[in-house]
Image (cartoon, rainbow, N blue to C red; front, side, top):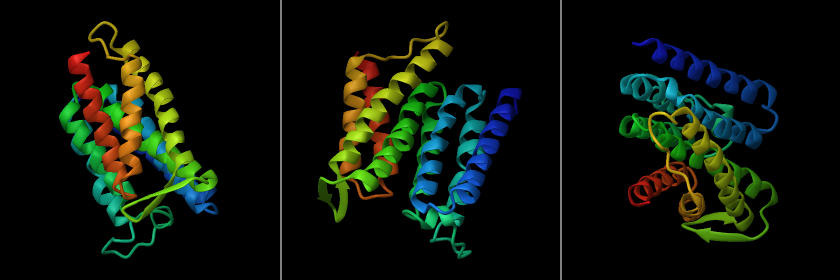
Amino acid sequence: MLSGDILGLMIVYTYVAVLLFISEKILSKYKVLSRKFLHIMVGNVMFVLPIFETRFAMTFLAAAPFIPLTFLMSPHSPLKIKDKISSSGHGLGLVYYAISWTVLAFLFFDKPWIIAVGIAAMSYGDGMASLIGTRFGKRKYHFFGETKSIEGSMTMYFTLVIVLWIVLNYYNYLFSNIALVPINYIILIFVPLVATLFEGVTPRGLDNLIACFSATILYYLLTLVL
C-alpha cells in the first residue's frame, strides 16, 4: 500500500471508532438521535476520499469491511448481537450504507467527487430527512406501507442543496489544477430533487441505496451533457 492509502485507512477507522463511541456512550439514552448522529456524521468520509491513492485500498480496505461489520451488528446477525444503534432503527440500513459506498468507490475511484455526491445524499440528505421528519413531521404521505412526511422531504432537499454546494466546491478547490468538477444551478436543483423524490417513495432502509444511487447516476449523466 502507498502512504496515502495507509493515512486514509487510519483516518477512516479512527473517525468511525470515535463516532461509535459517541453514539453508544454519550448518546446512548437517545436511541433515534444516536443512530442518526452516526448515520449523518459517517458521511464526512467524503472529504477524506482524495487521500487514497489506489482503488483497492478505498474499495476493499476502507469501504467493504463495513458491510460484514454492520451486518454482524444488526438484528439479523447470526451472532444475535443486539446492537443499540442498529436495533433503534432499520436493521439493515447501515449495511446498505456500506454497500453503497463500496460500489461507488469501485466504479468512480478516479472521480471522488461523484462518490461524494452519493454519500452526501444518503448521509446528510436521508439522515436529516428522517431526523427532522420523525420529530417535526406533521403532513404525512404513504408509499409501500411506509409513512413519511413533507417536512422530512423538504429538509432532505434543502440540506442536500447546501451540502452538495459545499462538497463540489471543496473538490473544485482540491482539483483546480487537474480537472473541473461540474457544479451549476441545474445540478444543485435537480440532483437533490430526484434524490428526495426517490427517497420519498422507497421503503426505509432501502432508501440508503436508492437515494445514493439516484443522486449519483443523475449527477454523472448531467456532467456528460452540461
